[in-house]
Image 1: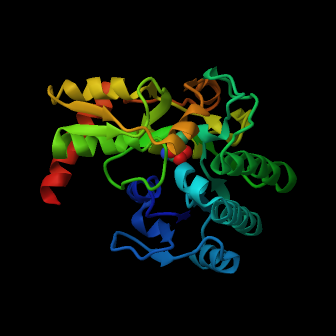
Image 2: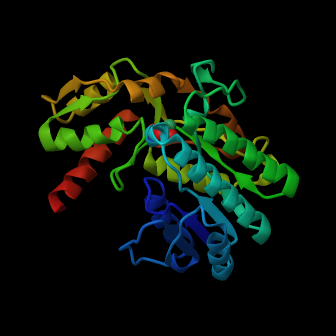
Length: 312
Ligand code: VAH
């Protein structure tokens, strides 16, 4: 039985549905800080900084797996660094403690944001220098180390991946740096143009949400004896810069217009991250693979968003 925090977030909202499909709706307890109108399975309000309530909800539900997805993303964390530290680290340690006390398997995502300007930018290795210059990055590196500690010290079966920017059509992400790659599809359909806050030539790793969800499930079901690493596996599907996603959109909307109004804060965050990371450890240790490249993602995003925007 699985408990998810941040179930209304960009990943959580789709992970909940996918897990309910696979394991049965009644076996997946979704929680988030705000109410949900999703009646497809059990839901509870939870502020992840409330350790007692998190423990009690997991115990009462009989959860054997904790998927901790609640966090503030990079741009928001840079605007409110202390709130980000308290929520991202407080929530994480509470989820790890509940997992230790109740014997739950544990997943939480790290990010390419765990790397910094001194990290090798191309084919960033699985094990390398991590000196991030954002609060989000500090949270992610500390989180990776804390998850390794709970495995080494307490035997908690912690697992995690470093996600690249995730693109999805279900829940709009809140406060990320890579989210221009989501917004662009909405604006391409709504107004035939997009003004990017990330400058042309800025490469970042990206992945389509269906591949991200499959990666979580494949890692959680992997044979632990084969895992050399535990938390923070580099995973990626593609790396592109704004002009390349614009070109991909023009294959469907020929006169799509791309403009730029660079946001210095989010550009600085993007510039501190790798251009492309190496996912060979994930491929070797648990068979990580992806189904969507940029053009396949663009085709699916535009098709699904057309329906969503028509019904809006
Ligand atoms: C963000 N989408 O932009 C998240 C993610 C790699 C990026 O961490 O903050």
